[in-house]
Length: 359
Image (cartoon, rainbow, N blue to C red; front, top):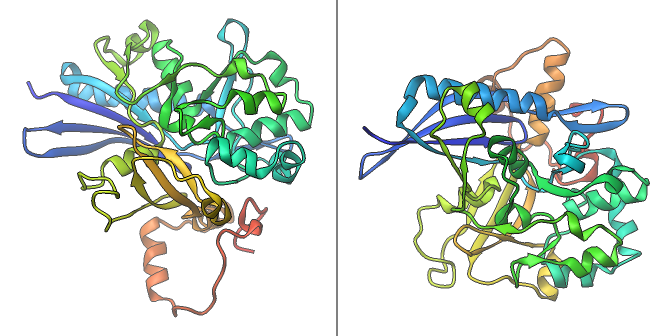
């Protein structure tokens, strides 16, 4: 019986469950289930709808089990970075996780730099400065005196949260932890001193787990719901870009083969190189590059660039106005348009989360 490995891959605008099979020479991938994803606005806040996402994960796993059953041996799950959920007493999820485009993040970088300098933060974390980083999301909660932090006992990144729901095991996977701006890439450990300087509760950060760690079988309730109790959950690089870079067809790091880089495009486009050690110096700080963890202990030195976010939001706005476009139709319309009529900076703040992207 050929073994089947399942991947749950969730991005900012869509998620999917994919079945992978290896015949000894070639990997064959089949998309079993796909769903749309996005933020939900309520009471001037922007959230991720965790329960809806969870329902889609269960539906997708059930569909995969219906097709492959006992052939399924393992499951790995990845998502975007920076966003997290907080568990309180008795492992209760305190709130739906905030979306990285929540308006509470406006101006938070400057507020943070008044307390700890940009240079000191970068020296300890090596991360590109963006308001969306987990550190600044925590500071935004602190700035508006949210009671959430008072009750928090565990911080789990989004894929860690789903893995906990799947298995009951709490683990902070390495590659996603490096997107928080709370981890020191030189040591591979949490920058607890930085947390303390900001007055943030360092105790909410758990033990770092590396890709390849086996979390165990599905919870009994989950196994019963999808109809399979033998699937083992294994940590991939739970940051989707880390797993994408792992799939780049190169067997050497940049230091040994200095003629390749990668571009991974989705809601965000990420362009960079894979190296053995973090690059943390004044030039990297000046250019606002980032050092994120890779699978196998590598470091991904890269730049986060706005990707398909603008067209995703335009498509959503047009849909709400009664004009539906498929992605194929948008590609055809773009191809038929006169090129180079205008130039925009997609990273400009006005495109962050406007009321109407087309306008």
